[in-house]
Amino acid sequence: MLLLCANFFAWLEDEVASGEVTEYLAALKIEDFRRQQEDYVGPSFEVISATGPNAALIHYHPSEETTRIISSEEFYLCDSGGQYIDGTTDVARTYFFGNPSQYEKECFTRVMKGHIAISSAVFPRHIKGQMLDTLARKSLWEVGLNYMHKTGHGVGAYLTVHEGPTEIDWKTNPDDPGLQEGMILSNDYTQDQPRQINYDLNLRGMKQHSINSARILSKNQVQLRTVPGYVTRNKEPGYYESGRFGIKIENLVLVKKADTKYNFQDCGFLTFEPLTLIPFQTKLLDTSLLTVEEMDWLDNYHQICRDVVGKALREQGRLSAFQWLMRERNLLGNKIRKLIKKLSGFVPKSHKVVSNNEKCLLLQWAICVRLQAKQLFCQLCLLVFTS
Image (tube, rainbow, N blue to C red; front, side, top):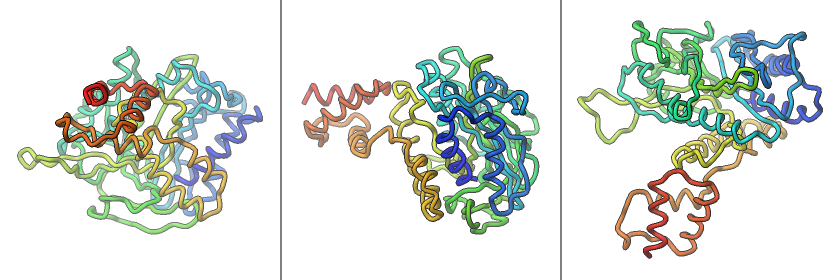
């Protein structure tokens, strides 16, 4: 699935400039790529391929009659998945092939902030997904925006793409057993289901769980694993503006044990690990709205994409898809990341081993991205003007 998406989006980005690619054609094309995969049985749901105002229709499916040309001046949203003999997949990405407006960038960035908040959350074992839902919506709520669907759902293993009862939603579900280690979720709006995920890497942490099947696949899939008896989870926060555009970001995530400093009453704390490895479009991000921690999360995520999916694309000689994958820039350079770590927390001036050149570099970077992490920015100013 991961290599399929890289191949599809690389193809789409190259073809959009022709002005001849429609939503319907794109939906057919992604299925063409999927049919080339080993053990593919059929789609797990009808492809959502939508641009402009059609993307604001949450379950829009293009037809030859309703299809629109995919324009470089509008958002393009693609949500698709497949049924394989050993798993079910579901993933969504939103791209903009031209130059987005500041408002469009803000909306996308706030959806991304919600996605990161859920992905990096740490929570007690058995907590219900309802208690995490606010994390995904907080950044949208701050400016009076919202979305009216679930934030997360389960995905079955060669079953329905929406499966309960565990979910991340603002509504109460009395049958929700709570989140447990080994569950795999979707960070998105849909429903719930246990499922295997195409992940081009040995899943860190899954080795400790009961694995029903784990095998190396050839060609477009690298590794597929199933956790029996658990619910797969999807995470897909979004934002939809009627008549204009729609934004959805959807990843599959694994619930795993969190490494916390303390363990209150031995209850055990959990966190999420992303299983879907498909880059986000960084040009759609307004970095002034992102904290250093959020930028660091994105950089780390993209590095895993490069290491895992990039390696497989190189081995298969898929140069166009590889170049597309490698294109997304780091928001924090390695130098900046190391310097920020030096300055984490307020420390005595005598312990700050930072050169004048490093101070200038940090301040230039902070001004460039209009850094909103106020505490860190104050530290940088104190460091420069008191030394």
